[in-house]
Length: 94
Picture: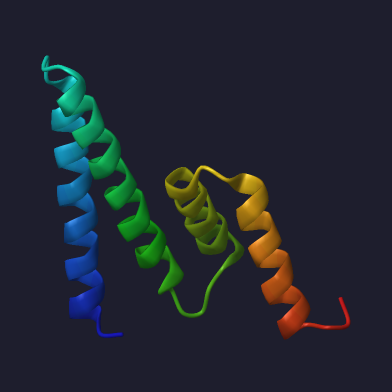
């Protein structure tokens, strides 16, 4: 991935985070809370993607990617199972 695309993805993460915070801080009703939840989820998903693109990956970028992914999915155990399955398929001797 080019540095330009990586930088543009980071700009998207920042825009989505800003939108989420603006919605959270507004004093509107339930519709705004739903909008905030969606904006927050999109920001976390974009940030997970951004972290996943680091090559070579470090334990820190993998942990950050996992944190962001679980924030979107809301299912730590499901995410853990996916990671275990990927590791088992990639490193069958573990």
